Image 1: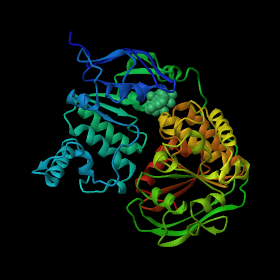
Image 2: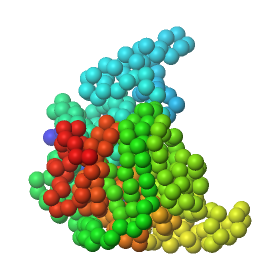
Image 3: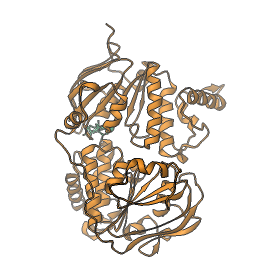
Image 4: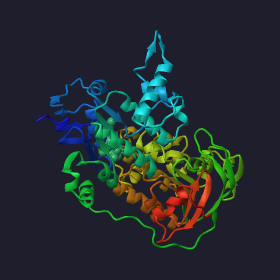
Length: 508
Ligand SMILES: Nc1ncnc2c1ncn2[C@@H]1O[C@H](COP(=O)(O)OP(=O)(O)OP(=O)(O)O)[C@@H](O)[C@H]1O
Ligand SMILES: [Mg+2]
């Protein structure tokens, strides 16, 4: 019998900070299959994949590719030579370069001493056509939506001759439609013989794509089965070790005073934000207003205006009566705005700063933390430690660097910071993307609690189940306009939102 494409045998990995990320991991990945890996935030999924891809070295145990153990000199270069491509959980693209430059980075075609740009562009077009992933080779990465950046990441991995593609939470930043498209492509690639390792927190996706699933918990394999032999409930129990209850908003209180007023807002499409056309709405204290829409229909533009980053061409947005455009980020925070950005690493957190520094974020002028610039380290760390334990952020303590946390745990910390500030208005932009089932339920509960304490919440989410379980009212954006204003209730379903999201119907 041919050996499996990849075999992990007793793989152990302890980080220098003492975290035992992998404990005796043993399982195999068969060629030509799609193999899912599930597990809570911090379970060791990314670490295991980095070992396979040569970015981390296991302390002991072995990794076999085609039955041959990789050597101690295993590296991303060796992994690529063995036909392994990896799309990382956090984007590794260079924002200042074009799509084509990013894809060929490190192996640029040359013409004499110069980089052959035409050849690079042609190569990217060829690969894009072959895998049917439409990208513009000349676009600047900085100006692309997260979904488009994701496509570039995947193309970059596929552009080399790949037999095994590792996707570390590839759908965390995609809309349902984009996910469906990606899956279509992946099924196609698998039919052509590509082996796929797929990490996801979404069991529906795991079931739609994978033949086999391995569950990790605290660095150990706690489940390994063909997908047909295991139920979703059984996977969820293995992932979490216990059951979690879904958060749902049950009681609706009378509305408080007006917090946010958006009036006839219009904005042409800018590079980093999509256009808005005559958007008006009012958000009251104690209310959760959901914003639905296919990515790229005005959500980015709206957030960018509301957070004071972009000036609208016409119209107004005012927070408690003050024009947001006249305030900078610090002033907006003082005025009571909290912001959980969709791209938590680019905008929300600093990977090279400690957990404590990230946890206090914009609050470093708070008198409770000492007199600026003489912050009390002790108070800052104690405050951070409280957030860490309340939000179950798995880390080595307040001094750990944000960059050493697993993706989901870093997100939990940023969420903790924004909730702790008790904002009068919280802009929650995809608040549970990339977060495991338990932590997502916790964050949803916090959003409900915040509204119950009288905050206004603007909830932008591509996860329609999430939107409908939290929002009091739903706005649907299409082409930058409000296509529908809907009261939430038992009759409002994801399917009912579909026609508005696709621009087939309006109810505004
Ligand atoms: N470079 C590092 N230095 C120190 N500790 C690390 C480092 N990378 C990861 N860890 C720790 O190892 C453990 C496993 O992290 P890993 O990133 O593999 O989790 P994960 O399963 O991918 O989680 P997520 O779903 O949140 O992405 C975590 O406790 C994490 O904090
Ligand atoms: Mg990870």
